[in-house]
Length: 517
Image (cartoon, rainbow, N blue to C red; front, side):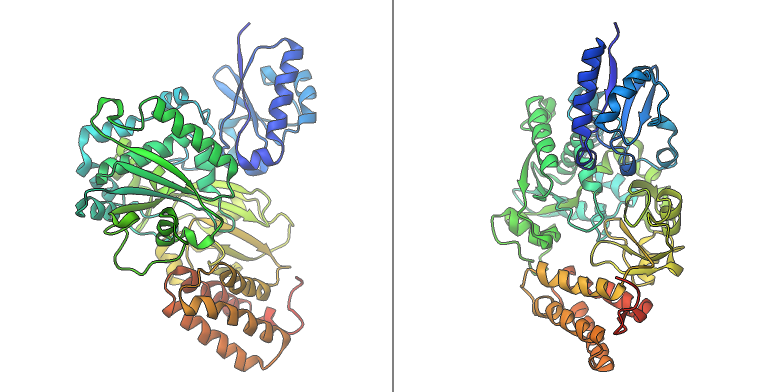
């Protein structure tokens, strides 16, 4: 009797809707039927609206079944599930699901494909091939490839990664560090988590390549505390890589030393800012540092440090393997390559979509997201987290391009896209931006600490009809002060959503409350 592979995701969104229970039910049913199966716990393909998405390997194909519940399992087996049998939950070959096959999988190509915690499976799918090639071509060539690729920071700032790495490589220092910022705190974002849960060895390889390129022998992953499953998966992956000689001293006899320490954050949003994160890593209160000096010159423990987001790092192995030119051929203008866009909010088909820059917001929402979950018209879309501007419906044809977004007073940020329909009260959303800043501010600078608190008060006065014109002018002046004088992007970007609401949804500030809340 041949053993049949059955894939059930071990990934937070899938587990939250019963994937573990489905896995147990499949194992039990296979046992009752006397069938020999290998239960593979992979990552999620990103079609979160189909989770738990279960697959069974039939010949050369993996047949997918979507939204599987543990109660469905007996019926699936009765319908010939292990042979890819017909059932209401059957979606067909996973390689033919339109949501997935039309994507540009560069960074996430292994996520969903491999067993997350199997080093053997990782090695079968080009695992550590890029690291070994890096050793062959040398550190300068790696940085040159990243420069040629035009890769920019995927954490939100969009700073050229090659320039940052070159700065760290050229900096004087007896010790250098790689700091992976995995404090993914923006609303509507989950690409870092999905990558860490679905391809943890890929992140380990990416950090090792970065370390080799800049001359660092130690890396830190700063992981948000709200990701317990990610923490478990990364912990096991790091231990496995170390035991197999892919981390530690003299990796695989190469003469290159590199190890990784996993650090758990404590729930502070502002620690997503690189210098506050470094403070926290050093055991201090997570408060933003003054710049200069830049972390690339004087970062963690005062040493040159390359601080990169998870997706930024994970984009590098294929750049090394396939060449920087191949990456730069994707995208538009100065926005090169791909970004993992995340669809959330009032959208029918939420999930992750990796596409080349240049796709429009409307295409993502309608072609991939299927429109609003409510079926009502789109009123606003917030892109770039809680500090991102709200785009009105007439701006949905804006291409996702860093510079195109700057031109309309918006930002792409981490690629999170949150959709609102026409029942949303945008005045309340503007108020939320100020309130969020007031709660999450580290308190170091006055414009952010005090300005956000005053902002909530002023918006409340406008909504209640109290001296509307005077308070409107005061709110604009307050936004100017926060934007120009705040120490970091926490206070500096809080005006973005507020200004966009004032500009495009002013009617919602009416005393009657505008649209329904």
